[in-house]
Length: 144
View (tube, rainbow, N blue to C red):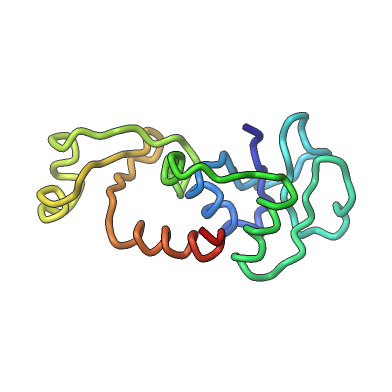
């Protein structure tokens, strides 16, 4: 799967692409050209029309996400949803309940179905209301 390199002004889009399971780092500096096999997503007009670049034309997140998926002919796989850290883009790893103790609130430890964590930044994730709302929003965006 191609990496989707996001210009620094597309941080929200990058987070939602990560939520879908795509490797979407946010770049502090744009390379002189898109690296082979990778796609640069940007809103910088000077980059419009360059090879390996998707110029994001929309202002609204939902439209930006639809544009990327359509132009790159990407079909999101629900099995990959929530597989990357939304903060740092690293693939999350399973976390045993006993290892989650002390890292999540007691109520969450007792009620959550399972846990994952980011091996880079240490954030712990679990299925909850935020994930449910994000899934509902994705379904509305993707039309599923």
